[in-house]
Amino acid sequence: MRLGYAVKTLGGGGLPSHDARKWQSGPHLRWSIEALHGVFDHLEREAIDMYRMTASLAPYATHPDLPQFHGQVAECAAELSELGERSRRLGLRLSTHPGQYIVLNSEDERIQEGAARDLEVQAALLDAMGLGPEAVVVLHVGGAAGGFAAAMERFERGLERLSNAARSRLTIENDDRTFSLAHVMALHRRTGLKVVWDILHHHCNDPDGIADREALELACSTWPGGVRPKIHYSTPKTAMEERRKKVGRRVERTWVLPQLRAHADVIDPIGFEHFLRETAAGLEFDVMLEAKAKDLALLRLREQMAARGFDLRPGSTAPRPQPAAA
Image 1 (cartoon, helix red, strand yellow):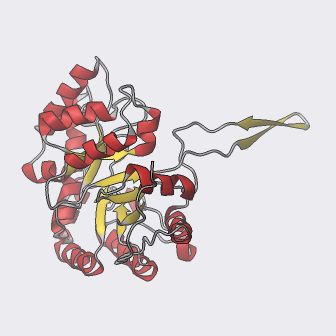
Image 2 (cartoon, helix red, strand yellow):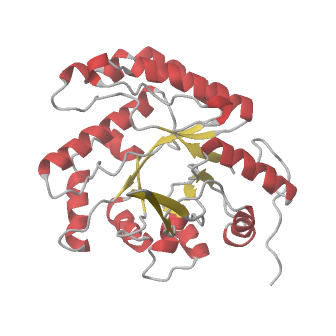
Image 3 (cartoon, rainbow, N blue to C red):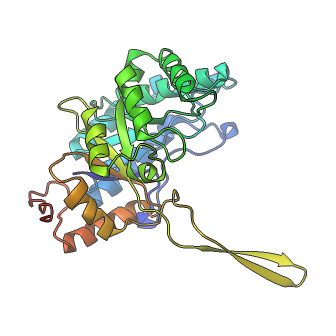
């Protein structure tokens, strides 16, 4: 089982994930590639073999009013090939996850067209790196305006805008408010798209009452033989936050309790042990950790799990503990 983290690297004093300058400063994919080499250095040092790259590697590459940025992938073909070769040497599993504004099932044709352009760039980056089929682009289905049936039909129409190369990279994820696992499984049956199961989203949004083991098996079954499934795992935030507001000479304090869908800074090792022993026993897949402490959360979890009898370091041949007896 590979453990990964997303985008930001906090260890070693923090590392940039991409060229984040505004368009006026002439940002470019080549500088994002340089940043990624720094991240890869960190992954190698810490023996981390799974990483989600930012979806902003090629800045403004799909902006309709800035055509000067549109050719970045082709301009960096050699550098991307070298980066991909290095990732293969390190045994890295890479992915991207476009954000909330990439809505392939939007009712607005312009937004749908923009989403398709963005997904094409994401796929082109992975292809230019020469990455295998485990390198995927993870996407939420989108909004449910007009009802689920209409929303899923719009998604399928949006999918028709994509090239075969982009479709082959695309996976869909259940979300915490709208499209549950049952919905994305229905879309899988209609489109053949692979499913990335998010366990926290499932616990927030599961109107069909699908047990975790069954949910994990369903999602894993959507991946073809020889391509290892991946899931998203996070712990819900439990800490409350203090907010202060100055009123005249006084400072008013209020406490805000966390929502279930909010991610915690780290992963609960007791919950993760239960997940491995009960939910995941006998199944093979990789885990993208979604924790605010990023790589620090991964390293802490790995230490804590080792103390509980699980060696999750890359290349470990230690047997995984068997499920507890009923």
